[in-house]
Figure 1 (cartoon, helix red, strand yellow):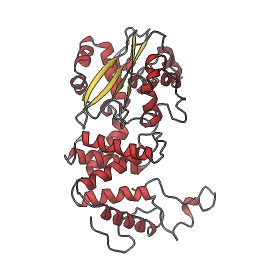
Figure 2: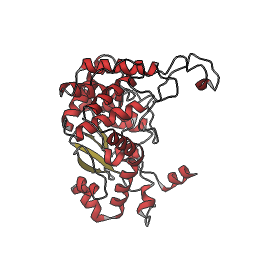
Figure 3: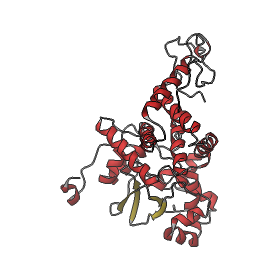
Figure 4: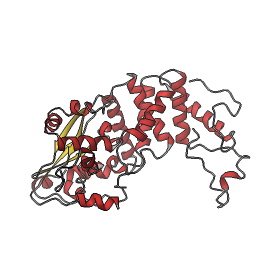
Amino acid sequence: MTGGNDHHGHHHHHDDHDHHHDNDHGSHLSQTDARVRALESILIEKGYVDPAALDVLIETYETQVGPHNGARVVAKAWSDPQFHDWLMRDATAAIHSLGYIGRQGEHMVAVKNTEREHNMVVCTLCSCYPWPVLGLPPVWYKSAPYRAKAVRDPRGVLADFGVTLPEGKEIRVWDSTAEIRYLVLPERPEGTDGWSEEELARLVTRDSMIGTGLALTPAELKEQGA
Amino acid sequence: MKPSNLAGAPTPLPPLENLPQHDGEPVFRAPWEARAFALALELHGRGVFTWSEWAETLSQAIRDAQSRGDPDCGDSYYEHWLVALETMITRKALTSADRIDARQDAWLRAAAATPHGEPIELGRDGAPVPPA
């Protein structure tokens, strides 16, 4: 892999600068890129990691694991009362039953939004996140401003995300750990009676499962699709 | 948290500025982030460390960066991750910091000796590759 960090900006501003004059001075790696290659080549040579396994992991996280997994969990919980109860009682097992299995041995807990209560997830220490159902965390989730503000001023965070909750609604903030990861079960939007699980899953955004957003309404979904 | 915040309404903090807040951002922003990520998962998968140990080491790396003035806005996350990975590798004596330094230099020399556009391979500069 040659990486995306090759630098040759001191040449011309022509569109074709990739193809001229570069052969006389070789390629450039950033210090960081070279550092990671150093670690990887050492670990492979010593047999601590398998290069093929690394490729599979990256491919999996780039293409297969993402918020669509969590959306399926939520849609099923909205549609199937038995699954709902199982999810609330033992989220780890219920989620595993759909084939979403973590590698870090994390224990999953589902927290449910209701008319009276809104839940929001943060990891104040190091951005622990429910990878099997949401993929890898977005940049803002990993930022110190979010981590600090979610705990001190959750309503303000929601406002930053353009979400206003009714005055009386209580907000609970859940701090993830290496052992416990939370998944927010958002409220099912009005006007979705009779929708299939596949249709419902399209209403479930990543942010609604972190608690910095709500599930889309049918009207919002239509707007997005337009 | 100030005690006054516990009693009344919390003082609003400034908005979360400059943070991309939408779905659909790339999982990794550079290939090295993906490699560093996968290396930690693979070492954990092989039982080199527990996930609690990892989370603790990563938290420490983040705190250290913050105390050095990193605004820690999420974009430096994989830099912290890399620091934690290196800490773990040397703590578990899989190799030494000196050897990592030497190997890093070897990669930089190899890159400089590789015509642009060709894959960079260790040893391309003709010098012996330092031991793992």
